[in-house]
Image (cartoon, rainbow, N blue to C red; front, side, top):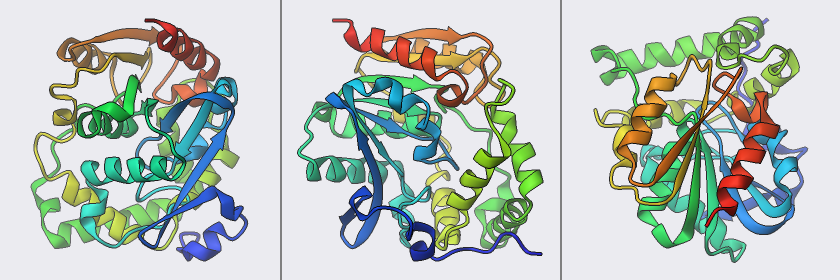
Length: 288
């Protein structure tokens, strides 16, 4: 049986409360808010969603208003058709417009993996909207893409391969599980939620949009150039996706940053070691 059927956006979100959506130019953006205090925005990584912070968010609610936004292409946010909407700059501008709807001016931002790249772009494009930054396993360098994926047939082949992967729950769980080191932190139930958040109509638009945004050889590293906000980098000791040396290299490039290593942890610290991420984040944000 084909298990990779794409659901309509309405079908994928019909059980979600209407108040968890913000409409921007006719597009519905999925947002969660909880807790009280200074706002802190949590930005997820590639192929992920707000679900990445299901353990971390409750640990920050005492003292913070915790906000998650499903970025364009992921989670329960409606997929835009225009490829430019998947560029880092547009993601950052969309976040600001969502924050405006809640009357939120400045906030601190925690970004995981690709979310750190979006957070850095947000801080550079809208410097007075961002206080401090926490980067968890920040994506700062990707391996060069094969030459043939720069052409339509190559992109289409890769898209169809991605659909095949998403159609096989066991294979998807095995491959996605490489981002985790702590046993039991990524269950089959978790895998199915992530998979369902990807199998939404508009996947092709998102796929092509991200390929377009990644054509620049300097992506994503250039997002961090000349960033002068205070930054805490949290690196997983056993991260196989963003190796420790890449975090060390990024820390050396940034103007005001410090690096902390989370022991016995892989790429997905907000899910593997949420208490440690929360503690280190609180300590850093409390520093003058």
